[in-house]
Amino acid sequence: MKVGIIGSGIVGQTLGTAFLAEGYEVMLGTRNPGKEEVKKWKDANPKGQCGTFGVTAQFGDIVVLSVAGSAAESAIKLSGTSHFNNKILIDTTNPIAAGGPKDGVLSFFTDLNESLMERLQKLIPQARIVKAFSSAGNPQMYKPTVKGGPPTMFICGNDVNAKKTVTDILTAFGWETADMGAVTAARAIEPLCILWCIPGFLHNQWTHAFKLLKV
Image (cartoon, rainbow, N blue to C red; front, side, top):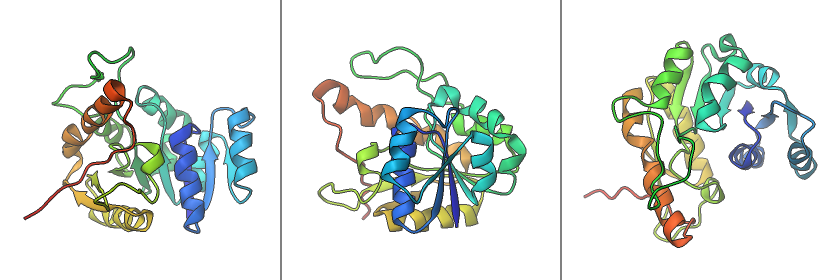
């Protein structure tokens, strides 16, 4: 199966390498395939491919959106909205606003009555979007090593079969999955990013993860 990664930053590179390790064909999408960081990733991952956003969106049977939240909608438009039709899109983004944190707390450009994921689903209604990887740091996204694991990845989306596929991916990546329901649940999942970042900003602690405990 082919995976296209829209976004060549650290999250995109981390997930691209992880999918390669699991035997997928991977293309790392970037606005500028000639960027030095993209070349370094390709050198370190010779089986990986690189391409523009549009080529990458066409390439992937599964597409991963791993750009900054502020660039999410423009990245999808640049990729060609029709290229996402009937495909699983793993949405890793968070709507982090410009400016730094206050008392360790980030600001969002959305509110609690709307998520970025909902905006993306409206933009590409034929895509089978699943929110995942939005409440964890990139060093722990693949084979997390936290004590008391496996940690919990919270997901949501409107397509049951798409969520099953993403759950299988998360299991292979070393995660437990908690399905929170439809796309509306992203209103609760995305703010977990704010909570996750507070220990980092206040205490330089960036290696933790969430765990959902059940009776």
